[in-house]
Image (cartoon, rainbow, N blue to C red; front, top):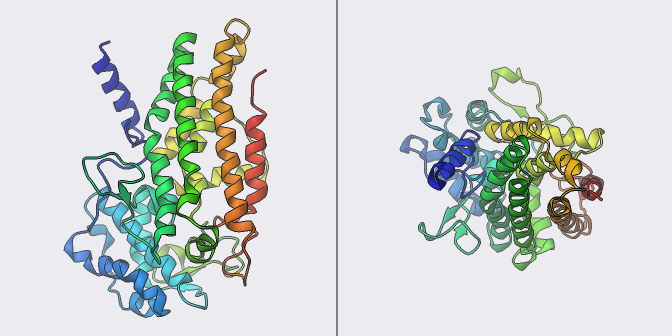
Length: 396
């Protein structure tokens, strides 16, 4: 097979899962930046959010929005844009004033539910809308990377909020070759090609190192105090949250029959990147409530990305092949261990950020609790457990 044919085949394999070789789980083409004119009311309201949240009267504006027909959205790019706008408006409505509301008006709830049904994920702000679909390039001809990307939508706005999300976008943008290497590595295992497997594992290790370096840049422009008090409050959901113990009522959504719904808030655990690495490297997490939470987070991912993780889990075992061949090819074991070590370091940095940006910040009231994450879980034990379980998979 010619190199060009191989690259085309590689891209086609990734495209089945809505993955791009050059940008990973980020959408291709770039996210839509405006809906058709009939949805101008959503665009206008979302554009004003940073100003309206300062007034403390954001709910009055949202309540005046018309109930628009989400079924008139013609393509997935429009649906993802609508999901982004409605998610920001919905969370602004719930968390944007001094008191927390337990009901969401039909003008947001009904189209939000419809768009979420079409996209295959819950009507709540998730990582896909907050990060994957929430950026644009300053120079359209330059790479998707820090220094050339800005957000499309904010809550309050400002450097810290921008940078917090853009670091995640920068990491995702670099992951395309890593995801391709995962598939190629599994093919090498199936074909019993240790040299090719070593090559692909080296590519994986190098890319994990690169995304680790991007993560280390978080503190450049995102201050822990500002993050905790000005960014984080809007990310919470309504599952296991002390301010909404029963959940949130979506008015006008017949499928919910007036019953409160409990959905997790936006969290990095909804990114498909690290679960894909766990699946590829055979890193198993002990079966307990923490592991069940990880599995639950997949329901908040785009369905195609969820399918990718499942496909990798069901594919040829890289770890078993390395173990079986380590005595004959120690370099294969070494490069596998390099992947595990870089993933462990990535998780260690994430754990330190969680301590500095959340745990060490002062807690006031129940709306922005420091003992549970925005996903509604005791995040410090989770992150520590996942890091420690990663390092236990080094092959000796």
